[in-house]
Image (tube, rainbow, N blue to C red; front, side, top):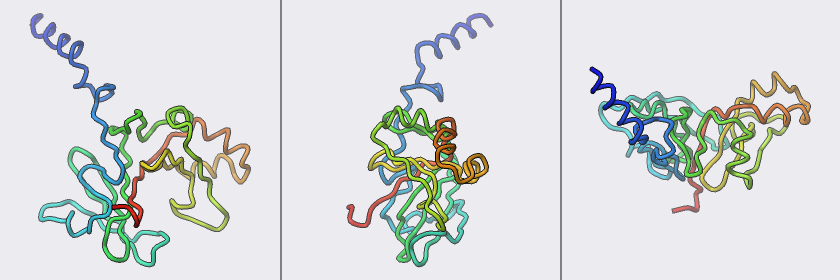
Length: 185
């Protein structure tokens, strides 16, 4: 029994890649791609027999869009929003087990995202608009952006931007979103 325990300790000590929090974990949040779902592809290419998918009508700028929520075993729920032609324009995930090349992941507080991506830009909502395009999010670079829970922010801050900016530093991101621009190949 003692030998087994020593062997287990040896494995975790010298092979940290098996740990979920390991810095050696593979980078899995890429531009336009999450867990096998690719922005720019037709949604029909992602649907197959046995796929667990929930479909919802999506709010957005486009005249007609649907949100497909894929229940992927090793990834969790991955949402793909389509345009009116059926092509995937945006992909998002709410689980924090995947990270960007710099080590950012869903669930990181705004203060950490600012340190990892100092060139990032915080977008705050404009009056009379709803939806993620006009919500609280931090665009890190061309890769995508991290969203924050707008309801929690409004409950805490009301309409005072000074209070909101102070509160945001400790607020954790709730979702990572990546996309493909229409002019990208």
